[in-house]
Length: 160
Image (cartoon, rainbow, N blue to C red; front, top):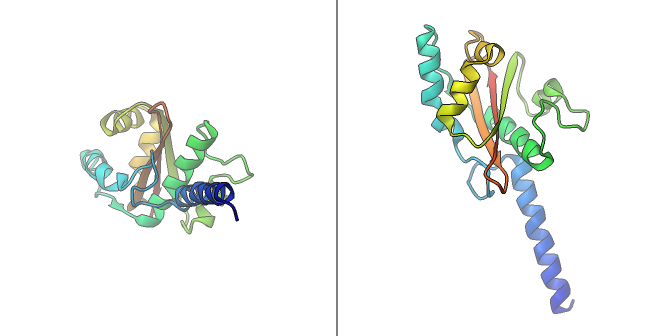
């Protein structure tokens, strides 16, 4: 194989590996623009929100964070905020494929916001607030994927 063909092959492998890490929900921080441990960062916000309502704190869960990161990655790649993937994979189908048992819920957001603003926006929305205050839920996963212009696609997955 000549030098150019090897370089093209290596570049293609690198792109494929980066895409696989994003889709697989890698939490090592090697995927540019993707969250690494956002659940740990969001835990205090959720604990405060639930405590104010007399509810126990939620525990971060790696399975739920992986599902959240996968959806955030899809939204960032497609440039659209949605609970489905456009590949006939709605929320329930995605959760089942990711090993998340029902009941589960999902909050989405998009924009150039930090975590404090994110939770403030979700609390101002009755549906998002209801999800975060649902007594059935004991675990959560929070993730985002970024775009080149600093926008973030946030996903919060809640489960029991």
